[in-house]
Image 1 (cartoon, rainbow, N blue to C red):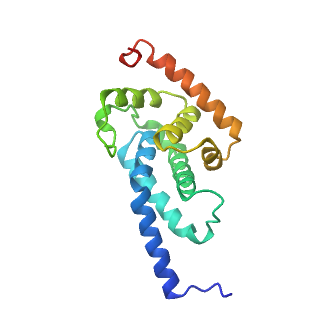
Image 2 (cartoon, rainbow, N blue to C red; image 1 turned 90 degrees about the vertical axis):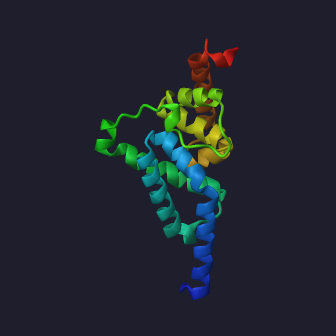
Length: 174
């Protein structure tokens, strides 16, 4: 077989890419915003994510779901932004009005939970976001973050324990 791409294959790749963007763009934006706490940086991370997706579509082996693959790329884009020197200078406190709107309007409890999640240490926060906000399974998270299944489970457990302590005495316990 030839490795050259026919115009028809290129058109199919472009169509598939457009479908991926349409299907996952909002989820990727939400997870990037929750991770980076800045709308502009989150949009940059989304753009970088889909640029990398487009460039590597031909190398996707199907070892995991497309969602896991895309979320893995998105998390790496967030890591890259997070590692930059000027990122540490940004005020990253999140208020409920800063959160991108979910598909369905959230309640006050949802905002309180989200703010509590954002107070978690990075490692626990990222697995909680992927598990609860993206609906990914532990194995998918392990693949996306290059972690052992047990590491993801442990981080989820610690995150839940911290969340419980953070929310004790709040309206959510009533």
